[in-house]
Image 1 (cartoon, rainbow, N blue to C red):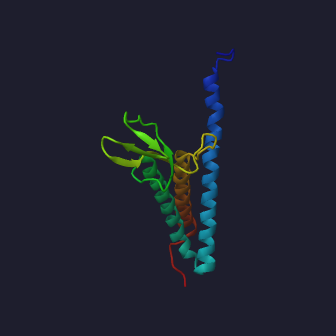
Image 2: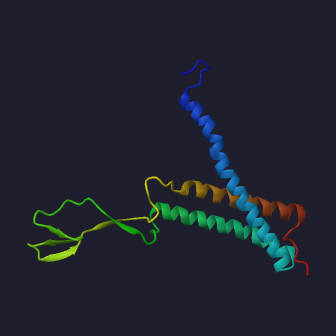
Amino acid sequence: MDPGGIDDNYRSIITKAPRDLLGILLPSCLATALWALLSLAAALLGFGNPWYLGILLPAGAFFYLLVAWLLYLREDGLVARGPSVERKTETPPHPLEAEIGGLYARPDEGIIARRPRERVSPNSSPTMAQPSPRRAKAVLLLAALELAILAALLYSLAGVGAVYAH
């Protein structure tokens, strides 16, 4: 403990929290701004009516929630990962087993088969940092909340989406 009364662990939490919050808040604001601008362009230039903005903003919030939910299901193990590269596992060899070029034979059973292999992602390597699904889910959830608030504010303050004008 240092003379100021704050130990190093607590100090690291205090200095790390703003970076973590900024790492979630900044991408979510960018995702919200991107969807809002695309919705505005689609409503005004594509459909020619600002009423569609009141539809497209909540649709974006729903889309972000859907993607966050799918990321949760993927992390949960319900949704299997895509194709992967094979890597050998450390299985104990059978006493009478002979290995020839990745194939193994058990004379007592009369079979020749491939050794079982573990599936890993093609991009996985010990030196490459993997993106955090937890952070991505937090960004998407916050962006969905921001879009929902933006849609509610535009509806209540400016009447966007309240009346369809020809």
